[in-house]
Length: 275
Image (tube, rainbow, N blue to C red; front, side):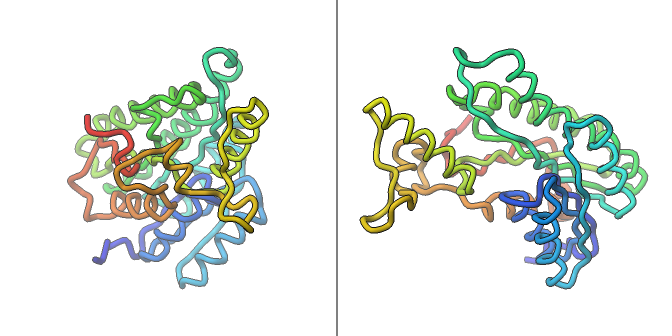
């Protein structure tokens, strides 16, 4: 299916690695020109080079979105680039429970996940309105509906992201600009595996851990079936891939999704169940 994205411009925040990079490359596969954002110049440049090899324009904008004025400057760069698709993907996650979390941890979760989304979106909205067509897509989490006891600050921050996406969709009524959210389940990324391995090592130290290694002779290789069974049981029976999220984002970014607005699309294998 042709998603009719050829010639459109997109900013994907946090696209120098992981899910964000896959989103950027998937949009490029559909003909989008992409502004790659990150904090690491080398990593961002590598993604932009891969996109350019697809025959579409790719540029890089750098900056820590939590720093004063940076989110606004990134958005202005996106405006000048001609981006009418905004994917608010950047957002750190850390592990804190109710016993260990401190006010600074809650503040950091909101400053990393909520405020950059607000600032980039607010700055770019006038350009989208003037164009008469645009997309704002935020990245939520399965933790929005099933808060994770070991990630309470992150879960709450992502719930705020979903809430404000619905609010934004209503605010933009009649403008030709839609706002939607994609909430991933447990997605295979290097950071996810690192978190799993760290947790397994901690559990082993208490004598109640489980083996997260792969087949014999493959030390350190993650056992996906074990992770699914213990951490992310879902009807599909596997972990998600970055491509699963990128495909959902590409559809919502496309003109084919003109009648889709204000939703949270859960791409999680069914782990959260039905409403």
